[in-house]
Image (cartoon, rainbow, N blue to C red; front, side):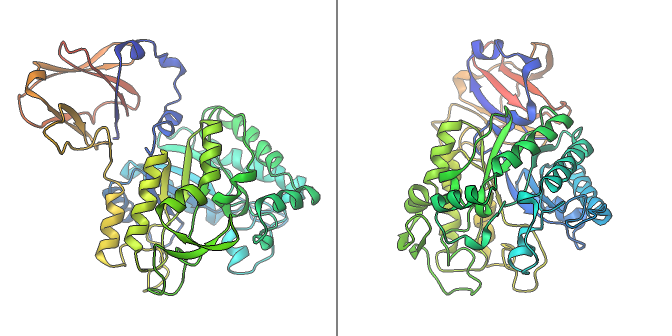
Length: 444
């Protein structure tokens, strides 16, 4: 069970409308709350793999599923895909980890990897109204299938929409012109998908990706949506020639690489990633004030400065409040282990594990100046309390959001008191120290 802890004023808490909460979306509104891995269907995955995933400290599995129907006419039911999705969801439920479902294929939509790497026929959904409607209906069926699961926290409409993907070298403005000329309206397609999903569930967070492999630079022309519970997702394998370089130990970061925004070679470091690569993501985030999700990133093979690159990407996510999911977890691609951080040098895996040691409010206190702290954040069944001597209290109390006292725990006067919260149901709670004025706001 997971908790997030924020210090808020008593007045703020008292005016919360418990009935108006959307618990799943509330978690997305907590900066950088969701942190995890992408997970693909795999015949080699067992429950133990999902247990190991959760043991990293990650709290999210982004499940990349094939559609419930095949790509090509007559769009027959894809029984194998349904079975695979059910198994992945069951494993997530068994270990108690949040999951999103992001849809990789369906009527008229071929998996982007199959289009690009395997050179299979292009998707036809972009201008085919029949396929758009069938795909939308499929999304509705997926949501209906899993919507009652409290761990299901988002539906990704389509992985890396890529109309005109073979013209990726054109800039954002030119792409927009070309899409309009070809009568491809991705916003109308996504709006159809959103409306169909809302028929199944009015509250499930809907995750929308951007043009051209969901590249950050193309947020310069991105569409936005009025849905109340929207999350915007993007992917980054920048710098080009570094993150996805298929020759190990041949390039170094910081270094000189191609900039999509400049169409020129420039020097890349953390500042350039933040102010150049992600500048349009940042601007759209400020305008929409919606949650943003770096849904794929990582490094294919070990390279010079590889752990620094991963650390810089993590720090940018934290500074921007982005949720994130690394690409990917234990997809069997052979002994060389591309994208598999457990198969790289130990410092790579350590760097990844450090991403799941939650920073800021709720982390383990590391200074005598910390007067009161609840940690870790999030917690598995237990929270720990450390407070300064002048705040010592006789009792610790936990209340429901409407003020019903659920727990009254005797304070043990220990430096780090262990508090069991594993018996609380999912919801929002208040945490109070005796007669102290501070109220803590807990989301489980």
